[in-house]
Length: 227
Image (cartoon, rainbow, N blue to C red; front, side, top):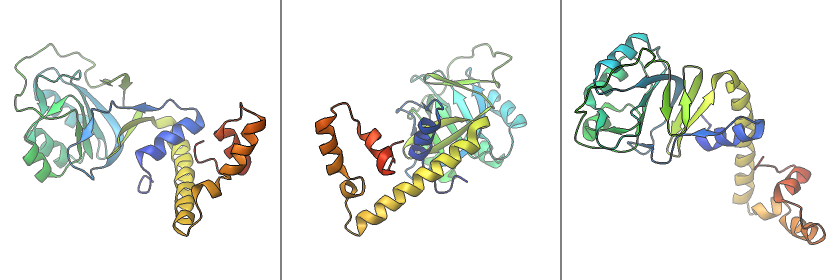
């Protein structure tokens, strides 16, 4: 159901149906251009040791996406090639890291989608106490996510979606994507976006009603791609 939908489509859909738009910070980027994945969130809070990932994989389901909370640290990499290969072999679709990775060349060969804040050669040099709920929730930037969330990732970034609203979000995103495609097709035939949205009419109407917004105008002409 996500094949034709981008993270911008999903973000616009959240806005249109009144669901909070929860994007990972812009520093969370794909290791390789063209990477994309989506699935149920499997949260993991890293404390300095690889065994928390192995424990997570004992419970994760095929199709999940591992979301790793390393506190946004930039002094250590918490995921490398062996963990990534183990994750791939377990049937997990990808890894999102609120922190850093390493072994970039090996990760590219493995081919599993990995999204992180960047790379660093050094691994952890600490071992903090592991909380009993370390596999129940993870923080990514401002957002706390759990297994009740779904995550979608592509070249534009990472967005978290409430699983309970997923079908509604997908339906809205599909409608938005279809509208955008129709607009683009008309533009390729020479019908400008301004013509399609009757932009000249909007400018004229705004002369008499200075408070009129473009979104209000779009609702009237049924071209509300911003809604």
